[in-house]
Length: 560
Image (cartoon, rainbow, N blue to C red; front, side):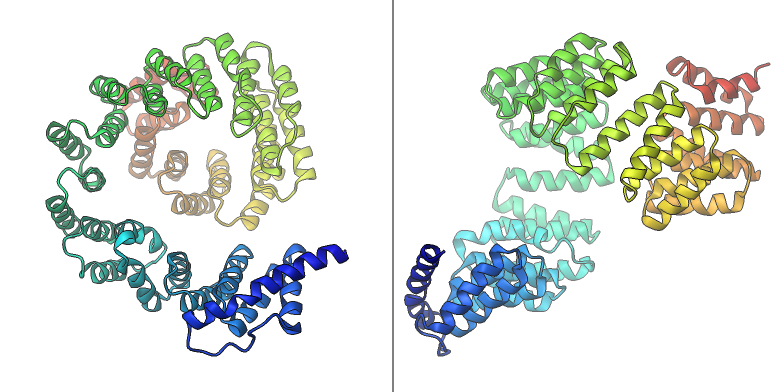
């Protein structure tokens, strides 16, 4: 212990002995401590010990106090970083403000102070710090590109736009400044201002891909075809713009224009001169567009090229093999994944294959052998096992597993939800209701809980007004969820409101051609007198899902 103290003391003395040089250049305020006296040594050691013991707020406060007394920017920096790590924003703001005062040339200090001022909602006080960041010519362009990220959490987007316009005004020929205005205008829902700013940016830097991507994003919001037309025209003018070509290919895939996307994939790989990163991205695009042979080709090309995360590609190759109904090859790829970031995903995927080929018990045994899991990963494993048992229609086993898990981890919303769903499966509706109400109290923003309870009431044709309220709450929390839309359509059906029922059920079915949604939509259409359309929907759904219980029961009920 004496030896450690001696080392620390020597560091403290060395640290303090140079503080005056900083103090004289940083501020006209006279330091109260100018040497490694007893007070300095005591407070510094106390701060070090507090930090080592995890008392970070105390450590930060001690370093901040020393920074004020010595006027040393290094101590202010230390105080700011420790406070930020300790999640003490007020203390971090105080320390970072002092840091910028003592070291006005530090970009890191100005960034820290700006971030904390913005986070506190104090945009007015943040502006001078941001202006200092933008005043430096060598960092100005990146500063403007970073600007909207810095301001992204501000609720008043119009105010943000005005601030960005003010900050950009002194730099009329800087394309990044106009890009920042365009971004702020886009977030403030001012597309005309955004387009004008991007046109100005393009005049100062023709062919700039960053600005072009923003322009396409704005056009996509108006119409995907407009964005695709813009990409095509830009690439005709600038054929070597690979970032734009990649964005173009991704947009084509998202719009199901697979044949148009294929040549773009090939050009990307050719122009990248065998870059494994580009090959991997093109492989993923091919996988998303169901071009599995092409996906395999590019993933393997990326592996041969030395892609830095081979386990990620093994995972994708396994999924591609699964979709090609080649379970043996899928397992070969999944088994290549080593412990690390992608290991659990690989084991979960392998379990799905083993459940199909060797049975659920073999799949669960595989998952039970996965070790060194975080709590979140343990929950994911249990959820997967419950789901595998449910898919095998072993509902009692799934319920018992979920019940055991909830008893061991009662505060996990995910496990409580699964337990409630399995209780419903085996007819224990009282348990389901209790658990879902408990979950809603535990997590008032858990949309699936409101939806499950509301749908259960609607399906049993009871408490329909309460069911409607529950499902409407769920839809407010998750507005684009097709399962919740289906539930709302079903409760309207139960209430006898066929127009609203069909409207919501159609919306849900357009998003996802799910067999249970097809069953509900067909039944609502049948009741409204549109039997032929109902039959067509059921026939299409049965071709894709011939064993779905709800769909089979519904079509049997209306078979003539």
